Structure formats: C-alpha cells, structure tokens
Image (cartoon, rainbow, N blue to C red; front, side):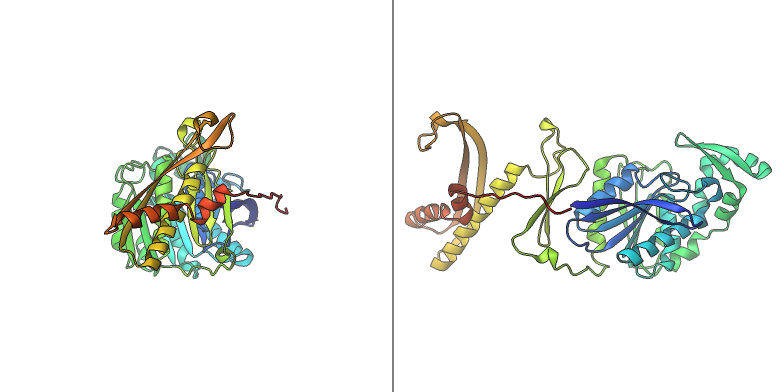
Length: 406
C-alpha cells in the first residue's frame, strides 16, 4: 500500500548526488529494504519498480537508487567500478540509518546482487540478503563488452554499447573487477541468504547460483524462477519474487512495532501505481489487494470493490451463525456463504420500494452442515438477516468525506 513514493537525493561514493526513490507503506514500515539494480540499469527498471511496489504493499519500506553516473544520479559512469558501486550501497544504507532506520534486508539484481553480497559486511543491521540472477564473480559482466576489451587495455578506455546505450568503460573498471573475490565474501556473509535465479537465464547462467549456494553458509535458500528472464520483464515474475522475499525475510528480521497499524476500526486503501486500478487495503496488521478485471482496464490482480462488499456480508453472516449456534450449543459443523451482486430493473423486484430505474440485488446462499433439525436450520436462516453488516446495508448510512491534511 504505497502511501508515499518520494524522490530523494544523497551523496554517493564520489560525493556526487545520487537519485533515489523511497517507497513507504500507508502504515509505519515493518522493516526497511535496500534494493540494488542490475548493471547499467536504473532504480526505475521494471524489476526494481515492480518488486519495490509489491514489497511496499506487504508493509516494507523500500529504498532504490541509481548508482553513480546512471539514471538520475550525478557523476561520470566511466569513473565508476564495482568497488564504487559497493560504496554507493553503503552510502544509501547510511542515509536510511540517519533518516529512517538502517535496512534489515538487502536485495540485489544481477550485478547488484554481487554488490549487496560485498556491501553486507559494512551494514551490520542487515539480517538478510537476497540476490536475483546474480553472478558468482563480479567479473562475469566483462563478457558484455569482451569485444572491446583489447581496445580498453590498449587505449585505457573504449565506448561500448550495452542494452542499446553507449557507455565509456575504462581500464580501471576491468582492473577493479579482476581484484574482486566472490568466494571469500560469500563465505563470510554471516547473514541469511536467499538466492533467486531462473534456469533459463541466458545472461547469467544458473551455474552462478549453484556456486553462490555452495560458497555460502547456512541459513541459505534457493528458489527457482522457472521461466523468468534475466531482467524479470514479466510482471507476474516480479510480483512472485516480492511475495517470496517478504515471506522469507519475516523469519530473520525483527519487525517494527507499529501502534498505528493496530488502530482498530481503521481501513486504509491506497494506490500501488502498478496498474490503472491496483490498490492495497490495510486493516491493522492485515492486508488485501483490490483491482478491476481486464475487461474494464484493470489487471485482475485482486478483489473488485463489489467482491469486497460481498465478502464483508458473507463473513459477517457466517460469523453470526457460528456465534448463535455456539450459544445454543447446536451441532453446527460448517458454514459456507455464496453471494452474487447484480443490478435489476426495479419493476422486477416485488419487495422493493423503488419502482423506477434499477436497484441493487444481492443473492445470498448459505450452506449449513451438521446434525441440525428443520427448526434449527430455519432459525439460522432468520439469524442470517441479523448480522451487523446485513443491518448496515438495510439501514440509513451517513458517509462523511474530507480531504486529508497535506
């Protein structure tokens, strides 16, 4: 439930300003996540944006930023290297630490995964590290510009084209990659590690995931991303990664106490900005997702508003029957409620006061199981109409709306 998506800046490894986005949920975050994007990508890549949105929906605050010389960040990419990327990550963690709270989870995509593995020992508060399609050895990226390597070594610099964009790569970049040791860094991690990798990744072979897993000490986990591509361009893949990350990380982090999240009777609905109609719903510590079907321009990723209305009536109906049966000590074993909403012509509704236009009709079918006699079943059917939500829908309702203070 993204209530706040702000653009911020902080000084990076070279003292230049780095551009970042901080996504915060409507309620105080359960914990903070620091996300490192893939090589020559940006904080606004599909993977970064979608994973961040999905994690925020699940209650995490997420900081994602552009490394020096990329995206909206200042500086010259040609002067950067893997070590400066690691330093940028540490600077981002320092900003979170001073402005909000140190990141409890580090996530890196592709070369960003290798970078978070390297930076983790400088961020002591981070309890969990996750890599997505990450290379075992940072030097793996050299294959992307292997044809230009002789020119880089001979002239000290060469222009290469990566993902359709031109970059200057200097010899110091190659020298820095050659000096990195992934094995020692991974073995000394001392944090929970989750490795996510696709067996069909043609950019970073899955053998890299195997080598990372072998080098790491427990606790460590591996999740196959099946048919996903290296950049996670499929929305469903990014959302799946976020759901796995959220569930996995909850085992290793200390969740922040959130008095606001426990406030009774308050429901917050916020846009996620993933699609035209996607929203997240928060009630206390519980969360759900709302959307519209594809037929009306939605992504069909959650309950429709009328689904939620029917769910409220159905849940209230079942709970009311359960409470009544227990008070009477009746052998009610199971209750299931099926509901449907339609708009019908008023003239077709025999018991409606309105005679013109259309009226809303909710059909409710209640399935009751248990050794109940006919009289008991009939009484439970009467009690269904006494559930609080049913009464609210039939009563006069006053809705007062105001703008929240800026």
